[in-house]
Image (cartoon, rainbow, N blue to C red; front, side, top):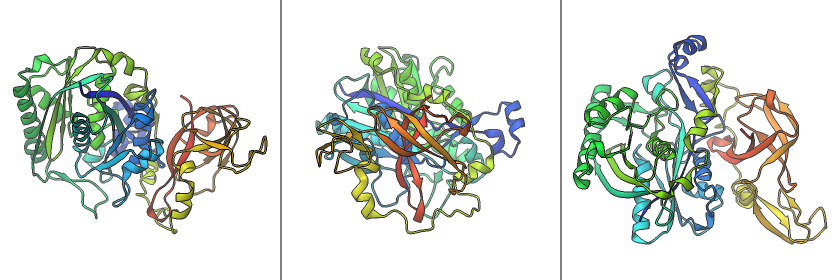
Length: 474
């Protein structure tokens, strides 16, 4: 049996009211109940969100067992440098893990999933982690901007411990210019809406569903849950209705007005939502679109109960904070003139990055073999027992901590001042100097429980520099 062994998700904490996107006031948006979209914080991007979803998916699973990691995104910050390798390093996977990037289409999430599935079926890998994340930008106040949201999802494909078996698959390609972005485009571009929906989305999704129903000899009423990609809520409802699915009883909420279309991560995110509440024996139809379509029939197994308890989608939907205003959102995306230019400077020192990557990306500390003292950053001499070069590297990102001291810096050039700087003591007594993120200064206090999250520290030279930050435990 081959299928999904585990799943995880990540949705940024901030939500932007859609009424504000349209030019309305916050008060009007709240009164009108126009909905909202999930937006990444200024220190988040596709890589940081993929790491967060991957950590959620691997909760309780030995990371040494992961043989390969594939990363799907249309908004990976580098044009030439592998994103999967960055994610694998931050997740502290084996050095001999195989990695690959998938992009170029919002169907990249299921394309990567199909690659993982084939690898496990062929016996070249036992466990393949698929992570998909996107942080797409549309022109300010456009219709696309209202529908786009930022999020990530992760699926672990395996042969053993499967919670959802893959029963059958259909894929086809289609050449159409409907939604695109070139190397020179800051924003996603789209052709006329009716053409995009009718000849791109609707034709391909309907064909994919009809073909996989024919292959499996199943009908619309044989499915307990139906997960459909869609460019917008109206198109989603129309296709679901035309295919004969019961929107209320079968079709999974596409989260428009709560999260939005998360690009390559959108379909995997909705599947994770479906798996959260799926019962053993349930049939799931999972369909994704983008330059063609992918359709999967999944059957939930008795092992589904063991995959519950992780944060996945519902926890993140509940953890939300309204972004103060639209101007701040524009600052987060560098769409407003500012005295702080992230393209300036020489950027990350490759030499320092190479030397410190176990500390900075994998977030490793040292544990003294003689007395057990945990410390960060790496030292040659233990400050407790003075043993020299007798350390083992240990992963710190799984630990919890508490704030020992803090300060607010209003002059650090942050797009969301003040910058909160802390000293945190982890479980085991290791003290680390860290920035805090996703926090209101009013909630910061001594002994505040925190956990760790992978984020951007800055973007000097136009390239992101990643490290770990702390965030309040919620």
